[in-house]
Structures are given as C-alpha cells and as structure tokens.
Length: 239
Length: 394
Image: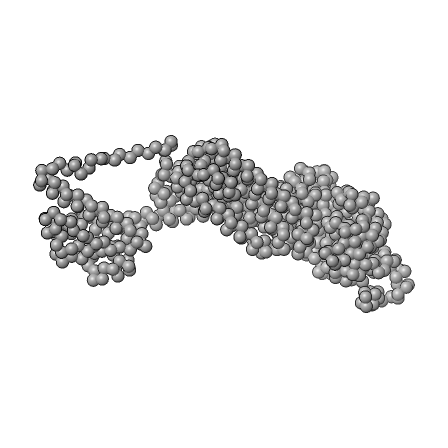
C-alpha cells in the first residue's frame, strides 16, 4: 500500500532524509520512531506531497507521488500533533465540511460521512458550535473527523498525541486502532517508544535521516530484550 | 487548479473573515465612521472659528490721538478695540488678533493729500489673526476709497475715472458644483488609493500568516485542492474584502462631507454619474487586486501575524507616496508621461473622471499598466506559494 523507494530530502547541505526504504501494508501500523529532527516529519511531508523529494519516490495506493500527486492526496488522510489546526470561527461541522469539499466529495456523500463521523465520535452535542471555545479533546475529535472524512486508504499520523492529556491521547489512540480495523495502511510517527509498542505492528527507527532498524515489534523484543525505551536510547544515543 | 475548489476556498474565507469582529471593525466599520466623525468635527470647528473671529474682532490700536479712521473702525459692529501695553506680545499670545499702529499725523496727511503709513501687527501662524488681518485690510481699503472719493469730488472729477474696468466673473466649467468637484478631485483619489491598498491588508494577514500561525495551512495542503486553487480562492476573497472596505469608506466619506459641508464651501457633488462611479470602481478594483496579491505573498512568507504586520507596514508608505505625489497636480493639464507611473496613474485617472474628463489614451495606458502589475503580483504570489521554504517557514 505504501512503498517508499530511496526517498531523500536535502535542505541546502543538510540531509534531512537520506535514501530511506520501507513498506506498509494494508491493515498494518508502522511506527516511525526517532528523536526530534531525525527526519520523521520531513518523510511524512514528502509522502503527503507537501514537499518534493530531492531524489527517490514512493508509491501510495498504487500512485507515484511524483507523477500523480493529486491522486496521492486523495488517498491519504493526515493528522498532526500539537495544535489541532482548526478554524476557530467555523463550527465543527463547517470545519469538516470544508475539507470534504476541498477533497472533491459530492454533497450527499459528504453529508452522510460527516453525520456518521459526528455520531461515531460522539460530537452531536457541539457539532454546530464554533470550535474557538472547544476543549482540547473536543478539538482533537474535530481534527480526527476532518482527517478521515474523504475515506482515505492511507493514514499518516505525525506525533498526533504531542501535548495531549491522557483522555485526548486515548481518543487518538482508539482512532488509530479503528483505522487499522478498517484495513487502512498507517504510519504513526512518534518519539515515544511506549506508544509505539502499544499500537504498532512494526517499528522503523530513523536517525539523522537514515533508517537504522526496521522489524516487527515482537522480533525487536526478541533481538534486543524487553526494555524498548532503553534500547531506543542505546540505538540512537551513540551515533 | 479547479473552479470548484477555488469557490469552496472563497466562500469559506469570506464567511470566516466576516465572522471575525476584528477584521469587520478594521476594514468595514472604521472606514465607515472615520470620515463622518473627522469632517463633522472639522466642519463644526471651522465654522465655529470663523463665526467667533469675524463677529468679535479683538484688536488694539496704538495712536496718540483720536481720528476719523479710528472712529470708522470703532463704528464697525464686529470690532472690539482692546487696550494693550505690548501689542506684539499680546498678538503672539493670542490675546488680541492684531494691532494697528496709526501715525499721529494721519489726519493732517489726509487733509494735505499725502499718503500715510499704517502698520498692522499680526501673527501669520494663527488662523484667527490671518482672518482678522484680511478683514481689517479691507476695512482700511474701504476707508481710503472714501478718502479718494472726497478728494476727487472736491476737485470736480468723476469717481469712475479710477475704475476704468469692472470685472464680472463667470464660471466656465461644464457642470455645476465646480469647486466641490475640485475638492473631491483632491481628496477622493487619495482616499481611494489608500483604502484600496489597506483594505485587503487585514484579510491578507489572516489568510496567509494567520493560517500558518493557527497550524491550518499544512492540513490544507494535503487536500486535493492544489496550491493554486487555494491561492486564487484566497485572492478572490481578499479582493472582495478590499472592495467592501473601500465601498464603506466611500459611503463614510459621502456622509462625512455632507455633515461637514461648510468646511468645503458647502458645495460638494454627492452623487456622480453612474459611468463615473463604474470607471472609478474599475480602477480601484485594479489597485485592490495588485495590493491584495502583494500583501498575500508577503503574509504567506511571514512566520506569524505580528511578523506579517511588520512587513506590510512599509507598503502603506509606498502607497501614500504615490497618492500624495499627485495630490496637487491639476487633472486638466496632467502630462501623459505621468500615466506610466504606478499608483500616480490611477490617482490621476480618477481625478480626471471626477471632473468629467474621459481621455481614452490615459485610460488605456493606466489600465494596461495595472493589468501588468496584477499579472506580476499574482505571479509573485504564485511563486511564493509554490516555494517550500516559504510555506514551511516557521
């Protein structure tokens, strides 16, 4: 579903991402693990066609991101961490609808999808209120609904739980698992080993733009032992 | 780029902007009320001042003896003669509007058919003093004409020998309300250009840097709407906001002029012909589009709202220079070369429209150049929107 082939991105002389290769299949959650500045966000931005790769490419849902960026964008949903990035002066429903429209959905289809998502995420009560005064958890739900309103086959999560409290983190984690149940291909970037261990099927460790480990969580534990946090620090620490 | 996405962005941005109290106040409410308030106060104070000064001219006269001139001045209803020890100082302090120094032998000089020198001390930095000076001068003139008349009559000469020519003024402008139109041709281009420039600013700041600051830009870039659709949708909504702001400032100006009409000689054409309004509207729209695109480009480059505002403020000064540069140019004699100067050309062409000139050459040159500016500004915005370093500059 996702095939990353020799993807590189240089910013002037800095190699932010340096010739990386990995794949993600349907229904699989791959944890992209790395420290701040390791190249996680740059990788995701390239996959989402926001940044042009310096070299290499990736196939997303069968579309090449260099040749058919438009089709790639129709196949992906993306959820960012930190601020939810919503329009405060629009209602929850309007925020979601805006992205449905921008993703070229028909009126009927978008209305049905939005209603379903509002119900699923338990947002009926405040769906038609402006998001400016929402709590963090409420905003997170709107952002979740927005990211998936166009039924993407691939979901990208860029440190989605960054700065969230326990309740809001739980909402996001449940959402990621529900995406897995819907057989989507998922990349989940994080710098928290615990979270990766909890959610992911496979771990890709990225350090200074290069992949230094790529294996199943169970194999990983068998190879290095149980304390993943410690292993992570050891793996990236001395390089 | 697709039309549906452009319209989606346009509609959303317009709703978003119109729900923002800050934007509505800055770009619609303030332009609407600022002129009525300004001109209302100005008109009232000018009127009040004129009345106050002309109805009670406080002057001081220095002369050793009473004479006919003093009696003549004192006989004027609106003149109050005040005693003053130091005339110069009192004039400077504004205690009296002016001082007259009349020579002691004035009566004698007049009798002997000689001329006498009268000195007026006034303060040319004071509006009241200037006004008083004019009134007193014309009174003295009147008095000296009387003296001449008596002299001529005593010699048996007809008084009309002194006025071989009588002037009768007739205004030759095509339409009425000439002075008001002239005032409008000074003011309106200035206001329209400044508002055309600043009108889109609040919206541009919000739609570029604001989007970055809120973290909404990245999700937007992952949708199927291409960057150019986003850009054009945004440009369209900024243009409309600029237009709304400009229209409200014109309405405000009209109300204001009416409220303070006396400050403009009470003769201002409030309604232009539809063709004038349309022509002016077209050129203001061009200005809005040029600056809207420029402002959006700068705003998208900025990391935050604050930074955008800092970068945008010099633009206002450039615009002011263009508008003020043509402030005193007479629209009837504007050289064609000037129509190649950015901003100045629009200002001049609007001036011409106001006084009823439609010069195809001037209109053509100005229109052509402004289309060029728009294309350049939009290309610049496009360049900025496609640059990764700009979009992800945080």
